[in-house]
Image (cartoon, rainbow, N blue to C red; front, side, top):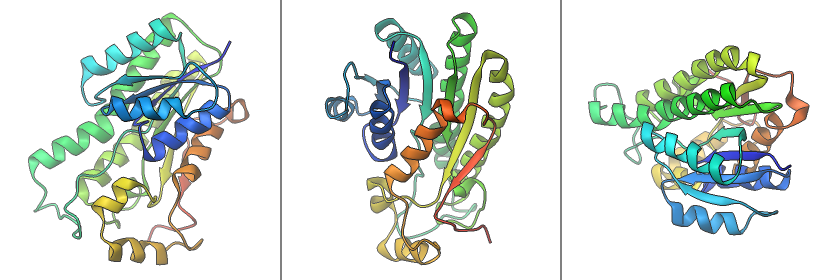
Length: 251
């Protein structure tokens, strides 16, 4: 029986690459995204069959619960959850300060990047408590911005991604008796459409020069890390923060 994997933010960027990598590895993918039309397009390009797109707003409790209900009714119990949806809400060309950060920006950034993984993890654990699966996997996506504040993304995003790291560690302890591992990937700057639209060319070039490998990350770089953590090979890894950043060290 093929294992079912939910990937949030699956329509494009790291989420799309993750859906592709997990499908290649034999999973049936439930692609969750606000842009369900684009998610459906992505689903048709994945290897294997049975992949289905679902509309979801990860920041909304009822939407997340509806996603899990629909996926499990249509595809079966979720064995793998990849919480990829997220991103900064920026003013292009300028790193926001705390003083400049509005309450609205803070709330929206937290909702997308921290509340979303919390709601998804909670939904997954509640269902696996009642209906266990073997070798369950949860992978969140944090960020190097959650480890060091020296990034162009500003305080709201850094704080939200730091929260993801500690949420992951808490979830790893709670999920262990259920046979589920929980880990997070902390990418450095990754070359996605969102990054290209929200950072200037000068900001991107400055970041590239600070990366020892000499390039930005690619969505596939992050997706392959997630795919490893979702695999049987990673069965003894839980509560870990995997830094995928091309060797860039915090200052």
